[in-house]
Each structure stands twice: as structure tokens, then as C-alpha cells.
Image (cartoon, rainbow, N blue to C red; front, side, top):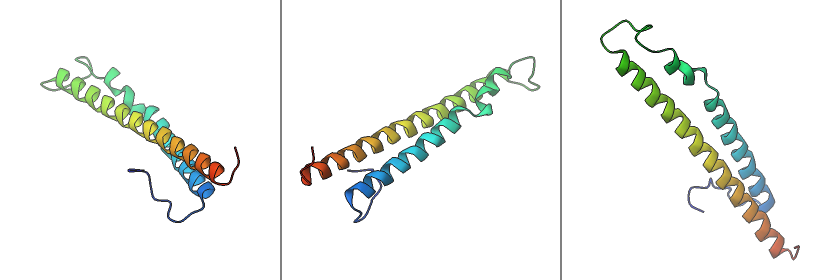
Amino acid sequence: EPGVPSTGEMPPTAAADQLRRRAGALHGTAAALQQLTALGLHLLAGPETWVGPSPQSCLQDLCTRRNLLLAEADALEAEARRFRRVADEIDAQAATASGVQ
């Protein structure tokens, strides 16, 4: 499948296991992004904490960056789900090929 890391000439079960491990790593990275302390910086930005010409610009920039981080975390989660789906498909195909239902 396009975009799925190559598993080379691995047996199907090993390939599915590798995809599940990679999915787990992506999920862990997404969870770490979602828990960054930096995601709350926008709550500390405002006219009372800002010294300079544009506190609103700073706040908007922080909010934009927060949204980008959260969007990347969502993308990692989606990719992890896709890897798990492909792993399940590999297992199902292997089971069908071996006559196991």
C-alpha cells in the first residue's frame, strides 16, 4: 500500500507485527505532542504579560503554532490507525492463504 513502510520480504506475521510496532511509536509521539507544556503558552500571552508593540500578534502566533502541533498529532494518530488497519489486512490475507478462518 502506498505510504506504508516497506517490510521487505518478511513473513506476513512479522510484517504485520512491525507495522503495529511502528503504529505504537507514532501513537506515542502523538501523545507526547498532545501533552506539551508549550500548548498552554497562549494562555499566558496577553497585554498584561507582553512588553512590545503587538501582544495580539504574539497571541495569534502562539495559537497558530499550537493548532499546527495538534494537527500534526492528529495526522500521526491517523497514520497509526492506517498502519494497524494494514497489519490487520496482512494477517487476514495470511490466514486466508493458510486456510485458517
